[in-house]
Structure formats: C-alpha cells, structure tokens
Amino acid sequence: MTIEAPSRYQKLPREQPNISCEHASVLSRDPAQGYGMEEVDLLIVGGGVVGLACARATAGAGRTVCLLERHPRFGTETSTHNSGVIHAGIYYPAGSLKGRLCVEGRDALYRFCATHDVPHSRCGKLIVAGPGDDATALEQLLARGRANGVDDLEIVERDFVQRLEPHVAARAALWSPSTGIVETEALVRTLRREAAGRGVIMLPTMPLVGGDAHAEWLHVRTPSESIRARTVVNAAGLHADEVSAMLDGRPFRIHPCRGEYAELVGASRELVNIKRPVYPLPAPSGEHLGVHVTPTTWGSVMVGPTARYQDAKDDHEGDRLPVDAFVEPTRVLLPSVRPGDLRLGGTGMRPKLSPDANAFSDFLIERDPQQPRLIQAAGIDSPGLTACLAIGRRVSELVDEVLS
Image (cartoon, rainbow, N blue to C red):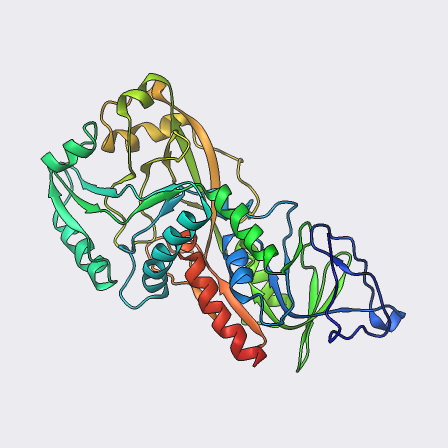
C-alpha cells in the first residue's frame, strides 16, 4: 500500500515517488544531485515496543509520522527477547521515571491488551525470601513499591505461598497482585497495526546511516533515502547512542547486557505447574532482579535471565552458559528441579546506560539539551515493556512542544 504525501509537504526540488508503508522502496538522493528529499513532521528511529508506542501516540492531528526500523521485522531485539512480565512498579526509586512510568504504563497496558485481545494474564507475582535471606528486604521492597503508588502489595507467610505455588520454597514473600504476563510478539504486532492504522509510514529494513542538524530540521540518511524531519525521536534501543551521535545529540553510551534463559521441560514442567512469576530478592539497586521463574501465555516456563555486560550489541549466542548453570538458581525457588528438567532457552539484550550492575540508571526521556529537535527515548531497559504506552504519551508531549 502506498501513502500519498499531503499537499502541504514540499518536494525539493522536484517530485519523486511516494513512500511505501510496507516496503522501503523509495530511493532518494541529495537535492544537490537534482533529486528530491522527503519531508515529514516527525521521524522515529526504532521499531520496538517503545518506538511503536511513540508512533501510535504521536500520529494524527494532520501530522506526518515516519518510523524507521533497521530489521525486516519490528520488535525483534529487546522487545521480544525478555521475560514478558508486566511489572507493578516495585523496584525503582520513588520519583524516578522508571517508577512513575511503570505504574502508569502497567494500567495502560492492561487496558490496551484487553481492548485489542493481546494475550495476557494479570496473574500476580511472588518475590520470595528463602531460608538464608534477610526477610527485612521484603519490608524495604514493600515501602519502595508503596512510595511509587503500588497500593496492593502484601507481605505473606509460607502458608500463603504454598497455597498459590506448592513447589516454591519460601519462608515469606511479597505478593504483588498487579503483576502479570503478556505475549510480547502479539503486543508488537498490535502496536504496529495501531500505528499504521493512524497513518504512520512504516519503513522496515531501513537503518539510519547518517544525519545533519539544521536550525529548523534534522536531515537523516538511510541506505536508500534522505528524509528531512522537523523533529526526530531516538527510540533505537541498543543503538540509541549511535543515533544520538549522528544527529549531534548529547553523548552517552549504551552498554549491552545479555540475559540468557533456560526452560523447564518434560514431566518437571507439568509437576511444578507454575501459574505466576516467582522472583528471588533483587539486587539492592533494583537493576538486576535475579534469575526468576516465569510462565508464558502459551504454557512454557522460562528460567532467567542472567546478566552479563559485553561490548557486542548483536552477539546473542557466543560463549553461552551451559544449562547446568541454571540448575542452582532455579532450585533456590523450586528445590525439586533436577538437571535433566532444564534445557537452554533464548537470550536477550538490555540497553543499559550504566556499566555498573550495582548502580541504578533511569530512563533517558527528554528533549536533547544539545539538539532540541531531537527527543531521546534511550536506555529503555526493564520496565520498558510495561511502561511503553506511558513512554509514548510522554514523548508525544515533547513532540507537541517542538512542533507547536
């Protein structure tokens, strides 16, 4: 399907083909060579859940929005390589963007999934304190969650845990009824469909390769097109630091953090029959939530993720942990699990703004201080999936500021 450019869009210096909504087929050249340059109000770089949510939130009002995605499919990096948990908002410092947008985004995401038939379950979550854990950490999590506006948390005893999950080892736990799970690929498909239905021009297989900043616009280049945008949203995930540098934005670095998963298999999965996520106590910073056990909407049970910082942004499989490395972390939660009950699962990459696993790093969502026509939506690791619709709303407000 082809999208006709609105008549108010100037073609410089002469007409060229329309932008295809589904295929990157427009070949633009530099105006100095005699060919035209596409003009849009807003260009979004990155087609994961955050970029798609931003596209959905910013489209309309007579505005042309274009989304670039470097891969052939949308949401194939961080968005669909995670635990698929809808977080309640427990772990993050009060007043942080992660805390505020997680709580807002959680409620918005439940409404969105119910409205659009995205498979999900508001199943609750247990954060357990085992025999060797300091149970006062549960009190600290309870206080932090309540400070973020999570008002349904409760510290429960072993008997409560046993009624919900008979195979889980715990002497006490924090019960979070607002936590859930979602099918991430279905969420990506639905956000994409919603954005396209609002007129967003979708360009898959279209990486950003360069750009120039001007007073009234940003000029971006792809392998086959040149686009002039009044504002750009940087939702490029693992590559957000590169995009910022290309467009003369503030310098920062994305630190890839790889998480690996295993999966419960065979009779063990049926025996354990986990119905909801079960987490250990997190690291004090809340940055690493620990290897946890999470059911999926399609019936499997995931174990993970681990956390390992690395330089390569695209190395998901090199030097994988052996499946035996998951046995002891799993048995902390499920003592009956044996080595033969696990097999290796997938991996995912989290875009961290800090290389320190013990330091909290917040989302970076702002009009760039060096390039005010560039809006940053960077460092979106967990709870980015939960917060994506709230991030889209916040970014939409910043876009309105630039375009007003």
